[in-house]
Length: 126
Image 1 (cartoon, rainbow, N blue to C red):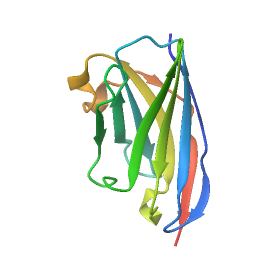
Image 2 (cartoon, one colour):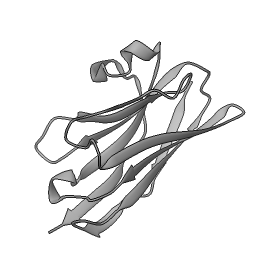
Image 3 (tube, rainbow, N blue to C red):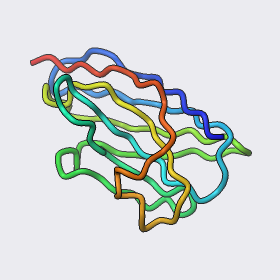
Image 4 (cartoon, one colour):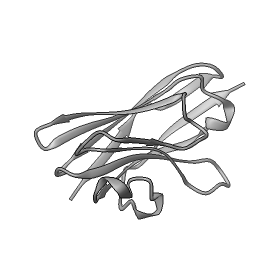
């Protein structure tokens, strides 16, 4: 069973940066790891994903060039990161780490993710 714990959220002014972290325990090789976000009154959306078996990355168009997903693998534990630069007020949301055991080609199918963290709030003021 994969367990995910996010950290690193906070409040920042527009143009600023934040780095989110997710500690993933109990995972095995060949997982898609993703970052999602949900703003009040809006549907949850996939932001970025990475394949643990090969480090292929995927991004939503709204964050390309501003956000970077990365991972740091250790024995039975993975640390997932989301570096967010040039933040905009529309990036304000609860951010979630998620995992899906599958092959690389499914990482962008956001609806398939099964394991979720509790979320961390990101607030960007103008």
